[in-house]
Length: 532
Picture 1: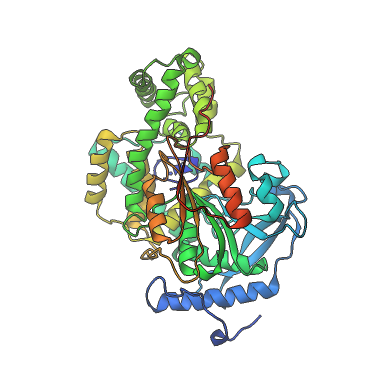
Picture 2: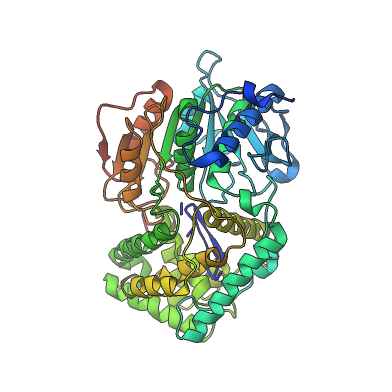
């Protein structure tokens, strides 16, 4: 399950995506302080390669230009590229270009504290919209913008950065797809075949990139971007999967971190990355789905979907059964419904829009649901972006860790979970199943831990987050000594730092502007409940 914003796909951490979804001498370059935070000579070679690439980038800098028109990033945002090795063990081998953009700090020269680099999650999310928080005058970020240039980038494989692909984008979004909840062994066999074919498609279309689509490589890329920006140390804001990227960066380059805010945390335990993390999501999504249903029931005067959670659930099951029998508008079946409705457990901002579409359908307006949940085959750029995001999601999660290859394991775990957590379990399973037959090398995850020089990191998390369950923040807090944890109590929106909550906003500002972490962990009351 993606850990940033939802995308559409059914079948094949952190939106939920696819549902059946300058020459240098090596010895003269200092390696990062924690070069072998992984294990073995491969990591040592990659650490040396990262140091070589960073030194090269520091010398080259970034040739900032007005952004290309089709990037939709208006002046004064500027765009450029940073060159990185595809394989850090071979720093002089094949290179790829990563797209970056920036907007200068809004305060004085004296106020400037450097660049703040952002990753929104995924894996597979683009960070290039980050500078628009300044051009759009986002009040939550106004204080931080006075001190920092806002820098976004497309990670390797994403968008404008050597993008990868696994299937034709128009085929990827076609609907209706099979119901992810299987009725029979034949249904499971069909989904297994789709997952295997998806993995083969990734190899056929992007095979040369797949072995190198790892979080540690993206962390090395981040260090090269830091160097290209002319920054001695990195200031980083990571949300969702971006927290895992930040955690791995902090482990590999502890002495290169200045300030780091990690929001909505992927559990960094090696036991969780990534198979178990996805199972944990299924449980958390069920809980947050119920929270949304309670809110819908409380606002029955607006939505007329029932005055209890059970009544709203009954309407949902009725809608699902109807769509399974006869896809709504010919295109919206159960898979498409889950892709659309999952945005409510993700984000409070989706509570009212999702309930409104549901309410209209029950009142007889099917078009609103078709418009919201069906693919738009005319949106070729959007469909290409969705397919690319899903390809990167799959490639990174499959390459980062070794996955179960036995179907019996998947079948046992998901059948058991589905009994009490039916909203998302099977859809999430099919989305990740390509990793069971992944054609490229699978690594051992980095052991995330505190290294010499790592400063205090600020961790922010809502208590009932569906995409990145709360235990992940607690685990990272234990592993990063000296970190502070801000908990938003009785809340569950994914991505907390962008919401209006003065208890959180003021502390994030204070940390980024002064380095002040506070003397203890903090529990904040929730942000405002959505209005119907």
